[in-house]
Length: 336
Image (cartoon, rainbow, N blue to C red):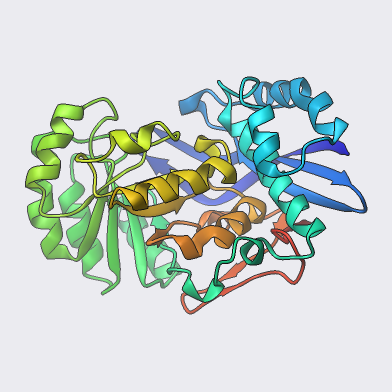
Protein backbone atom coordinates (compact mmCIF):
# COMPACT_ATOMS: atom_id res chain seq x y z
CA UNK A 1 0.00 0.00 0.00
CA UNK A 2 1.31 3.45 -0.95
CA UNK A 3 0.12 6.77 0.47
CA UNK A 4 0.59 10.01 -1.48
CA UNK A 5 -1.17 13.34 -1.70
CA UNK A 6 -1.65 16.35 -3.96
CA UNK A 7 -2.36 20.00 -3.13
CA UNK A 8 -4.64 22.10 -5.32
CA UNK A 9 -5.80 25.72 -5.31
CA UNK A 10 -9.47 25.76 -6.26
CA UNK A 11 -10.43 29.11 -7.86
CA UNK A 12 -14.04 30.12 -7.20
CA UNK A 13 -16.36 31.60 -9.82
CA UNK A 14 -17.31 34.36 -7.37
CA UNK A 15 -15.97 35.62 -4.06
CA UNK A 16 -17.65 33.44 -1.45
CA UNK A 17 -18.62 35.25 1.74
CA UNK A 18 -20.28 33.95 4.88
CA UNK A 19 -20.74 35.63 8.26
CA UNK A 20 -17.13 35.12 9.41
CA UNK A 21 -14.95 34.88 6.26
CA UNK A 22 -14.55 35.54 2.53
CA UNK A 23 -12.46 33.73 -0.05
CA UNK A 24 -11.70 33.68 -3.78
CA UNK A 25 -9.57 30.54 -3.73
CA UNK A 26 -9.99 27.38 -1.67
CA UNK A 27 -6.93 25.24 -0.90
CA UNK A 28 -7.56 21.51 -0.84
CA UNK A 29 -5.65 18.30 -0.18
CA UNK A 30 -6.34 15.13 -2.18
CA UNK A 31 -5.05 11.87 -0.70
CA UNK A 32 -4.29 8.84 -2.88
CA UNK A 33 -4.04 5.27 -1.61
CA UNK A 34 -2.72 2.69 -4.06
CA UNK A 35 -2.30 -1.05 -3.74
CA UNK A 36 -3.34 -4.38 -5.24
CA UNK A 37 -3.80 -2.85 -8.66
CA UNK A 38 -6.23 -0.07 -7.76
CA UNK A 39 -6.27 3.31 -6.05
CA UNK A 40 -8.60 5.43 -3.96
CA UNK A 41 -8.95 9.21 -3.66
CA UNK A 42 -10.11 11.33 -0.74
CA UNK A 43 -10.24 15.05 -0.11
CA UNK A 44 -10.26 17.70 2.57
CA UNK A 45 -10.18 21.46 2.17
CA UNK A 46 -8.28 23.80 4.45
CA UNK A 47 -10.20 26.08 6.80
CA UNK A 48 -8.79 29.04 8.78
CA UNK A 49 -11.84 29.15 11.07
CA UNK A 50 -10.99 25.66 12.34
CA UNK A 51 -7.21 26.12 12.07
CA UNK A 52 -6.82 23.45 9.39
CA UNK A 53 -3.92 24.01 6.99
CA UNK A 54 -2.12 21.98 4.33
CA UNK A 55 0.91 21.79 6.63
CA UNK A 56 -0.84 20.41 9.68
CA UNK A 57 -2.91 17.98 7.60
CA UNK A 58 0.13 16.57 5.80
CA UNK A 59 2.01 16.36 9.11
CA UNK A 60 -0.73 14.09 10.48
CA UNK A 61 -0.66 11.97 7.34
CA UNK A 62 3.08 11.50 7.69
CA UNK A 63 2.56 10.31 11.27
CA UNK A 64 0.07 7.67 10.17
CA UNK A 65 1.97 6.67 7.01
CA UNK A 66 3.64 3.54 8.55
CA UNK A 67 0.26 2.21 9.71
CA UNK A 68 -1.38 2.90 6.35
CA UNK A 69 1.40 1.47 4.22
CA UNK A 70 1.77 -1.65 6.36
CA UNK A 71 -1.62 -2.54 4.87
CA UNK A 72 -2.75 -4.88 7.66
CA UNK A 73 -6.07 -3.05 8.15
CA UNK A 74 -9.05 -4.91 6.75
CA UNK A 75 -11.60 -2.12 6.31
CA UNK A 76 -11.91 1.69 6.26
CA UNK A 77 -13.50 1.53 9.72
CA UNK A 78 -10.48 -0.33 11.09
CA UNK A 79 -8.06 2.18 9.55
CA UNK A 80 -10.13 5.02 11.02
CA UNK A 81 -9.82 3.50 14.51
CA UNK A 82 -6.07 2.98 14.06
CA UNK A 83 -5.76 6.71 13.32
CA UNK A 84 -8.03 7.93 16.10
CA UNK A 85 -5.24 9.29 18.33
CA UNK A 86 -3.11 10.71 15.52
CA UNK A 87 -6.04 12.62 14.06
CA UNK A 88 -7.73 13.63 17.32
CA UNK A 89 -6.99 17.31 16.69
CA UNK A 90 -7.16 17.11 12.90
CA UNK A 91 -10.35 15.46 11.61
CA UNK A 92 -9.90 17.22 8.27
CA UNK A 93 -6.80 15.14 7.47
CA UNK A 94 -8.54 12.00 8.71
CA UNK A 95 -11.45 12.70 6.37
CA UNK A 96 -9.20 12.75 3.31
CA UNK A 97 -7.57 9.45 4.31
CA UNK A 98 -10.86 7.79 5.28
CA UNK A 99 -12.52 8.81 2.02
CA UNK A 100 -9.61 7.41 0.02
CA UNK A 101 -9.83 4.18 2.02
CA UNK A 102 -13.53 3.80 1.21
CA UNK A 103 -12.85 4.46 -2.47
CA UNK A 104 -10.06 1.87 -2.57
CA UNK A 105 -11.99 -0.67 -0.50
CA UNK A 106 -15.15 -0.52 -2.64
CA UNK A 107 -13.03 -0.80 -5.81
CA UNK A 108 -11.41 -3.91 -4.37
CA UNK A 109 -14.91 -5.30 -3.86
CA UNK A 110 -15.80 -4.48 -7.48
CA UNK A 111 -18.67 -2.22 -6.42
CA UNK A 112 -19.64 1.41 -6.46
CA UNK A 113 -19.66 2.80 -2.94
CA UNK A 114 -23.43 3.23 -2.87
CA UNK A 115 -23.80 -0.41 -3.95
CA UNK A 116 -21.51 -1.61 -1.18
CA UNK A 117 -23.58 0.42 1.32
CA UNK A 118 -26.83 -1.02 -0.13
CA UNK A 119 -28.13 2.42 -1.08
CA UNK A 120 -30.36 3.37 -4.01
CA UNK A 121 -29.08 6.38 -6.00
CA UNK A 122 -32.64 7.13 -7.08
CA UNK A 123 -33.33 8.23 -3.49
CA UNK A 124 -30.94 11.19 -3.54
CA UNK A 125 -32.59 14.47 -2.52
CA UNK A 126 -31.99 17.53 -4.73
CA UNK A 127 -29.02 19.54 -3.57
CA UNK A 128 -29.37 23.22 -2.81
CA UNK A 129 -27.24 25.81 -4.60
CA UNK A 130 -25.52 28.31 -2.29
CA UNK A 131 -25.66 32.09 -2.64
CA UNK A 132 -22.94 33.72 -0.54
CA UNK A 133 -23.27 37.11 1.14
CA UNK A 134 -22.79 39.99 -1.27
CA UNK A 135 -24.47 43.17 -2.43
CA UNK A 136 -28.07 42.19 -3.00
CA UNK A 137 -27.76 43.02 -6.72
CA UNK A 138 -24.87 40.59 -6.97
CA UNK A 139 -26.80 37.91 -5.07
CA UNK A 140 -29.68 38.30 -7.52
CA UNK A 141 -27.21 38.03 -10.41
CA UNK A 142 -25.74 34.79 -8.99
CA UNK A 143 -29.24 33.37 -8.66
CA UNK A 144 -30.09 34.26 -12.24
CA UNK A 145 -26.81 32.72 -13.40
CA UNK A 146 -27.77 29.31 -12.00
CA UNK A 147 -31.50 28.53 -12.09
CA UNK A 148 -32.09 26.01 -9.32
CA UNK A 149 -35.10 24.68 -7.38
CA UNK A 150 -33.48 25.15 -3.93
CA UNK A 151 -31.16 27.95 -2.83
CA UNK A 152 -29.20 28.15 0.39
CA UNK A 153 -28.80 31.84 1.22
CA UNK A 154 -25.95 32.89 3.45
CA UNK A 155 -26.93 35.64 5.89
CA UNK A 156 -25.43 37.49 8.83
CA UNK A 157 -25.78 41.15 7.84
CA UNK A 158 -27.78 44.09 9.15
CA UNK A 159 -30.20 43.71 6.22
CA UNK A 160 -30.94 39.99 6.24
CA UNK A 161 -34.71 40.16 5.88
CA UNK A 162 -34.47 42.80 3.16
CA UNK A 163 -32.08 40.53 1.24
CA UNK A 164 -34.47 37.59 1.34
CA UNK A 165 -37.43 39.77 0.37
CA UNK A 166 -35.50 41.04 -2.65
CA UNK A 167 -34.34 37.58 -3.75
CA UNK A 168 -37.87 36.25 -3.45
CA UNK A 169 -38.99 38.68 -6.18
CA UNK A 170 -36.98 36.73 -8.75
CA UNK A 171 -37.76 33.08 -8.04
CA UNK A 172 -40.30 30.63 -6.64
CA UNK A 173 -37.51 28.29 -5.52
CA UNK A 174 -37.32 26.92 -1.99
CA UNK A 175 -35.02 29.00 0.24
CA UNK A 176 -32.83 27.71 3.04
CA UNK A 177 -31.19 30.23 5.36
CA UNK A 178 -27.73 29.85 6.91
CA UNK A 179 -26.74 32.56 9.37
CA UNK A 180 -23.45 30.87 10.39
CA UNK A 181 -23.81 31.79 14.09
CA UNK A 182 -24.50 35.48 13.38
CA UNK A 183 -27.85 36.02 15.16
CA UNK A 184 -29.09 36.27 18.72
CA UNK A 185 -31.98 34.14 19.93
CA UNK A 186 -34.29 37.14 19.79
CA UNK A 187 -33.27 37.90 16.20
CA UNK A 188 -33.69 34.28 15.12
CA UNK A 189 -37.18 33.98 16.57
CA UNK A 190 -38.26 37.33 15.16
CA UNK A 191 -36.72 36.64 11.75
CA UNK A 192 -38.39 33.23 11.56
CA UNK A 193 -41.81 34.88 11.64
CA UNK A 194 -41.05 36.75 8.43
CA UNK A 195 -38.93 34.08 6.77
CA UNK A 196 -41.65 31.45 6.95
CA UNK A 197 -43.84 33.78 4.90
CA UNK A 198 -41.04 34.12 2.33
CA UNK A 199 -40.89 30.42 1.53
CA UNK A 200 -37.93 29.48 3.72
CA UNK A 201 -37.71 25.76 4.55
CA UNK A 202 -35.40 25.93 7.59
CA UNK A 203 -32.76 28.02 9.32
CA UNK A 204 -29.26 26.63 9.72
CA UNK A 205 -27.12 27.47 12.76
CA UNK A 206 -28.67 30.84 13.65
CA UNK A 207 -26.76 31.18 16.95
CA UNK A 208 -23.22 30.61 18.13
CA UNK A 209 -22.46 26.96 18.87
CA UNK A 210 -22.13 27.54 22.63
CA UNK A 211 -25.37 29.49 23.07
CA UNK A 212 -27.33 26.52 24.37
CA UNK A 213 -29.83 28.53 26.40
CA UNK A 214 -30.54 30.70 23.39
CA UNK A 215 -31.06 27.65 21.19
CA UNK A 216 -33.58 26.24 23.67
CA UNK A 217 -35.65 29.37 23.16
CA UNK A 218 -35.27 29.30 19.40
CA UNK A 219 -36.21 25.61 19.28
CA UNK A 220 -39.36 26.33 21.30
CA UNK A 221 -40.50 29.51 19.58
CA UNK A 222 -39.14 29.55 16.01
CA UNK A 223 -41.70 29.38 13.24
CA UNK A 224 -39.16 27.38 11.22
CA UNK A 225 -37.21 24.19 11.88
CA UNK A 226 -33.61 24.81 12.90
CA UNK A 227 -30.57 22.80 11.76
CA UNK A 228 -27.24 22.42 13.54
CA UNK A 229 -23.97 22.93 11.70
CA UNK A 230 -21.24 24.43 13.89
CA UNK A 231 -23.01 22.87 16.89
CA UNK A 232 -22.67 19.37 15.42
CA UNK A 233 -19.11 18.72 14.30
CA UNK A 234 -18.20 15.27 15.66
CA UNK A 235 -20.05 12.18 16.84
CA UNK A 236 -20.36 13.26 20.47
CA UNK A 237 -22.24 16.37 19.38
CA UNK A 238 -25.24 14.55 17.90
CA UNK A 239 -26.98 13.71 21.17
CA UNK A 240 -26.26 17.22 22.48
CA UNK A 241 -28.37 18.63 19.64
CA UNK A 242 -31.52 16.82 20.77
CA UNK A 243 -34.06 19.36 21.98
CA UNK A 244 -32.07 22.24 20.48
CA UNK A 245 -32.29 21.46 16.76
CA UNK A 246 -34.70 19.62 14.51
CA UNK A 247 -31.94 18.45 12.16
CA UNK A 248 -28.17 18.19 11.87
CA UNK A 249 -25.81 19.02 9.01
CA UNK A 250 -22.92 16.55 8.96
CA UNK A 251 -19.78 17.86 7.26
CA UNK A 252 -17.58 14.87 6.44
CA UNK A 253 -14.47 17.05 6.53
CA UNK A 254 -15.19 18.30 10.04
CA UNK A 255 -16.41 14.94 11.33
CA UNK A 256 -13.37 13.00 10.16
CA UNK A 257 -14.73 11.27 7.08
CA UNK A 258 -17.36 8.87 5.81
CA UNK A 259 -16.86 6.40 8.68
CA UNK A 260 -18.01 8.72 11.50
CA UNK A 261 -20.40 10.50 9.14
CA UNK A 262 -22.40 7.31 8.64
CA UNK A 263 -22.57 6.78 12.40
CA UNK A 264 -23.72 10.37 12.99
CA UNK A 265 -26.49 10.04 10.42
CA UNK A 266 -27.68 6.78 11.97
CA UNK A 267 -27.69 8.22 15.50
CA UNK A 268 -29.54 11.38 14.49
CA UNK A 269 -32.23 9.33 12.77
CA UNK A 270 -32.61 7.14 15.87
CA UNK A 271 -33.20 10.32 17.89
CA UNK A 272 -35.87 11.58 15.50
CA UNK A 273 -33.79 14.33 13.91
CA UNK A 274 -33.54 14.90 10.18
CA UNK A 275 -30.17 14.76 8.46
CA UNK A 276 -28.17 16.63 5.89
CA UNK A 277 -24.61 16.35 4.64
CA UNK A 278 -22.98 19.59 3.62
CA UNK A 279 -19.80 20.46 1.77
CA UNK A 280 -16.80 22.75 2.25
CA UNK A 281 -16.32 23.82 -1.39
CA UNK A 282 -14.52 20.61 -2.30
CA UNK A 283 -13.63 19.52 -5.81
CA UNK A 284 -15.48 16.68 -7.52
CA UNK A 285 -13.53 14.19 -5.39
CA UNK A 286 -15.20 15.20 -2.14
CA UNK A 287 -18.54 16.04 -3.74
CA UNK A 288 -18.79 12.65 -5.45
CA UNK A 289 -18.17 10.95 -2.11
CA UNK A 290 -21.07 12.89 -0.58
CA UNK A 291 -23.33 11.85 -3.44
CA UNK A 292 -22.75 8.16 -2.68
CA UNK A 293 -24.19 8.47 0.84
CA UNK A 294 -26.86 11.02 -0.09
CA UNK A 295 -29.67 8.40 -0.32
CA UNK A 296 -29.50 8.25 3.49
CA UNK A 297 -30.37 11.94 3.84
CA UNK A 298 -33.39 14.19 4.09
CA UNK A 299 -31.45 17.12 2.62
CA UNK A 300 -28.10 17.52 0.90
CA UNK A 301 -25.74 20.41 0.21
CA UNK A 302 -23.24 19.14 -2.38
CA UNK A 303 -22.85 22.12 -4.68
CA UNK A 304 -19.17 22.76 -3.88
CA UNK A 305 -17.74 21.78 -7.25
CA UNK A 306 -20.45 23.82 -8.98
CA UNK A 307 -19.01 26.94 -7.32
CA UNK A 308 -15.54 26.40 -8.81
CA UNK A 309 -14.09 28.19 -11.82
CA UNK A 310 -11.80 25.21 -12.39
CA UNK A 311 -12.18 21.68 -11.03
CA UNK A 312 -9.05 19.47 -10.92
CA UNK A 313 -11.22 16.36 -10.86
CA UNK A 314 -14.20 14.80 -12.57
CA UNK A 315 -16.90 12.77 -10.95
CA UNK A 316 -20.58 13.07 -10.24
CA UNK A 317 -22.67 15.30 -12.53
CA UNK A 318 -25.49 17.11 -10.76
CA UNK A 319 -28.56 18.68 -12.35
CA UNK A 320 -31.88 19.64 -10.73
CA UNK A 321 -33.41 16.51 -12.25
CA UNK A 322 -30.84 13.84 -11.40
CA UNK A 323 -27.41 12.84 -10.19
CA UNK A 324 -25.23 10.93 -12.66
CA UNK A 325 -22.38 8.91 -11.18
CA UNK A 326 -19.08 8.20 -12.92
CA UNK A 327 -18.70 4.77 -14.50
CA UNK A 328 -15.95 3.47 -12.24
CA UNK A 329 -16.33 1.54 -9.00
CA UNK A 330 -15.66 2.91 -5.53
CA UNK A 331 -16.36 6.62 -5.29
CA UNK A 332 -15.32 6.85 -8.94
CA UNK A 333 -13.90 10.39 -9.03
CA UNK A 334 -10.66 10.93 -10.94
CA UNK A 335 -8.09 13.72 -11.14
CA UNK A 336 -7.80 15.30 -14.58
